[in-house]
Image 1 (cartoon, helix red, strand yellow):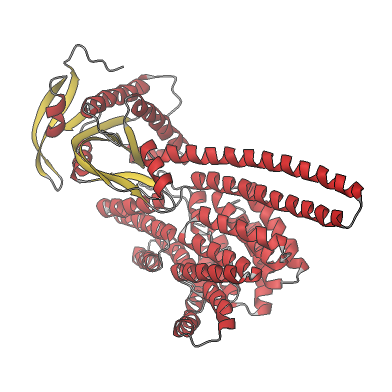
Image 2 (cartoon, rainbow, N blue to C red):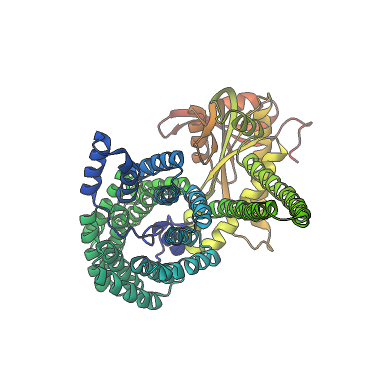
Length: 616
């Protein structure tokens, strides 16, 4: 396991969160191997059409299963699902949902992966496909493990293990033991207990000559020994695992293990070797689109450059880490959405079971006397009452989903998205953009626990959100300790610059008052604020996880205003100054050199000039 060290640029990356994000798929075994050559050969056969039509579904299933590229695996699993549904082939439909979920997991889309697994569970349960049900339970457990949901993780592992015992699938039974060991090691930080599980599963993999199982077993043992501080044993195991995985063409775990090797050599003081392993991990992750590993490899490089004393390069890699970290699904948001999906699937499953029972009553009633006709009527009455209650539950869940959508997007944008399925980009000729950040945030991040740091930042950002709502402004996003908002969209207004400066004063005063509050339990900061006005383009990015954002030179200049501001000051550009100069007392700072902008006129806003204007 990676050692927790005090690096400057790690405000939100705890050991546990890194592990859960980094090892989602090491615990989901593809026990028949991922041979790149085999995948290429099979893909060539399929694209050439040199096979009988009755073999199409099996070839698609094999391609979805063995292909090491998650994009390709997803493509083949989706085609498998489409064709299997046309032929009403339930076995291949269940397999299609399982493989599509696995591909989505590798891409970091946990919510969509869970949705596909749950659809597979519904069909596997109704058709009594026990082995497939065990595989689905194992995959669902791995998703909940990465979310940190201990209750559901244990629940689904316990569901899976007896199924594999019943169907006498020793390899899957071994993989379940491996997963439990992985869970004890990475989630519960009990490497000694984990090694006991690994010894049991490893013996089975050796007996069955399962190379992929042996590879993961070696790698997981290496992680456990690393957590115990036995780095030489850990290194030997991980090197053996990487060698086997390279032969099999399974690149995701290689990328993860390489970051561990980088850590081990960094702790020995061999930075040259550490850089080679970290850079190799990043190249693999980028090649196969593994977002969470791209994020982690950049974090590792950031830490290494900091050890080397190159703060600028360290910060560069850390910013890339944060960008990918934010693009990978936020764990708490994914868990909330996954729980909603789980509730809906269970409702649908209950409804399906109830309909099957009712249909059975109807079939029996056909061959029986008038007494059963009355029983049928009673059954229909209960069914209708159940359906009414179910519809009410579904309507409530739909309302909750719409409420969540309105929290993510402006109301006008959300309505356009629901109506058309997409949102057209729109240009606004005059918008005021504000950026804030906290002075010395990196220093605080080094000395505070992650929980305390997140709680303190949340305290400030919640108040900033209230101020945005008060002045009719639009919060755009937060990145680390930076807060970004805009005025004059999604509806054009004339006083957006005035309201933004009023809001900026409230933010500044709130932060200053918090710093003076002796009873405040949260960490206090100094804040810098920058504002610029000009044209922007606004729209929605993403097709599955939507995000409202703005682009343009106006945004870049606003960011420069914040960077060039001072703690406790509101720094504005000349374009904003021209709009508010009659209402606020402004201090000309001169034309100051800004990065990539040349000399830019800047002003500090010191207070109110207009007696009719208030800040509260």
